[in-house]
Length: 201
Image (tube, rainbow, N blue to C red; front, top):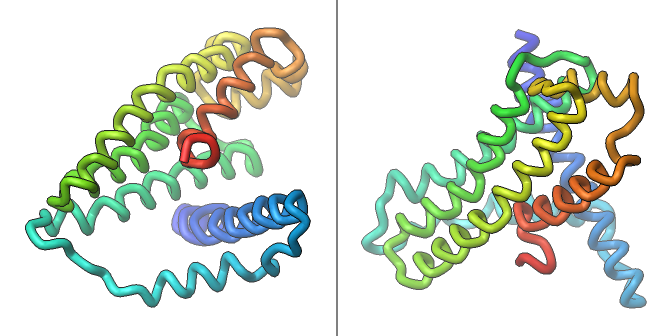
């Protein structure tokens, strides 16, 4: 029962969705302030989500129905599992050996789902977008993995998230070292590409 609660409510899907929407609001609010605008109210991301729920599902002519409809669910499942693993490791100090490797694999699911959805649509324009996403993924996956490898090596070759956290608690943050700082910058840039935010949108 606890596993189901972790996965669906806290700290899984529901909690992560709320935090993500609030983070989106902060991002939009700060961007608006920089441009001397008021920006959206705090509930705007939630209203946008409710609006999206009311949208009609349109299946393109000639599309592969199963793959086209399954692609968003696969991406959502990957993100939900990643958020659950990371939150449980950080909040409860629980994990399993190799959970970091699992997270790396799961983080690859959303872009793969985008590629699958675009390829399954049967549209040449969507296929072009899928091709672009594939090239972008090939560009950021290796640097991101190398940045994670730096954390693994600095933690004494630990491939458990809790092991990396405990290593930093005992020996100090990896960020204060030169290699750790470089890996952090690389990881931030790669995460921007994964999230398809500026300048990778």
